[in-house]
Image 1 (spheres, rainbow, N blue to C red):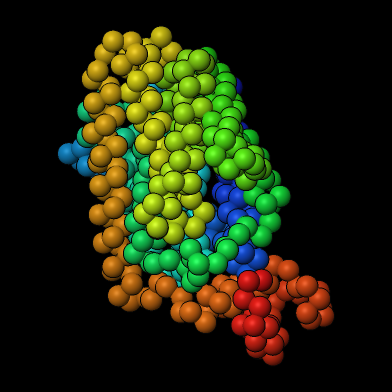
Image 2 (image 1 turned 90 degrees about the vertical axis):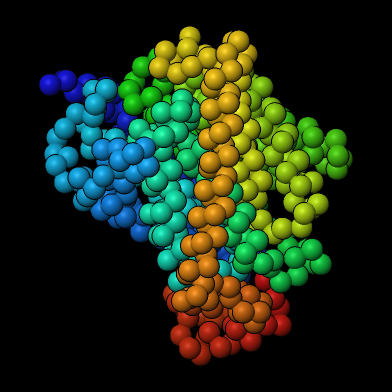
Length: 435
């Protein structure tokens, strides 16, 4: 029996905690970008899926994603509810399987939270919860198995070190699909819809950056040279992403913005995610710089050209950044960093690049088709789109009976609204719907 390495185990558990931080960080990042009447429901979406998907992953998700392979498509259910896991050592590592489960659970919980940014401010919470649960079971779990659990994309030779395919492309494209099906927000393209608290978004981005070190370096599953490489290229790509976004934004609009800076940083982090364990430092600089630039173009040009309402640019950053990152893996990957990987185009080999292209196509198609089917099914039983008066009022009041900012409108220390206060504030918001 392989002996457990305490250093590797400690690093993976710390990394799991860092990835956990990313879900409330997404809540702050997205929460600052919506209008104040929708900030609590936006934060609630992230926090609720963290609870719901953690339970789902332990009960069924881990078995589907990492159970014994069935025809390259899905894991068997032999580990349903973590049956038989015990104190096993994860094959090929020196860590307990339970540590790996904890680490992967945080990935599974984070991914639906990313999707929510695409359709913020206009979906009913009940429908959101049902849709994200089904999405995790029928889209995330199979894709995780195809790439990480020994499925057909792994057999094809596709590489995804920490989630470019499984997390970012899948969530970004799914978010775009759902936001198009749901329709645009009231007034989108006709009146200004602006972030209510950019400092909150900056704080969220800062904690996302911190968490990303666990996200990428933790995927080495040990405290080793591979983790050190992933850690450093993560920092370099994020830094370059800021430059790529801000310099292009500055040249086009004449003003560099802090929202652009943090968006560029996230774009650089997304882009390096699939490549973090396969590329050296200098290519990571190019990956981040190009990642920031292409994500800016997707947000500032592509979205305007096609007119879809990707509320908080989930597709523009995660979908587009993930696609570029997967392509970059096929270009810059080298076995000098990871002997278990492959060489990319830059090193004279093409097999990996074509495997990445095929995998991107599979991820995009699966996200579009799967999300459309699930949306149609859920919408038959639960109306997903709020009506116009509810959207004007704001989902904080309509869906949760709370306000993030009391503004002196009623007394008392509690933010919970009774019927009388709700009716008063509902009438207030109908006349001041930009709040």
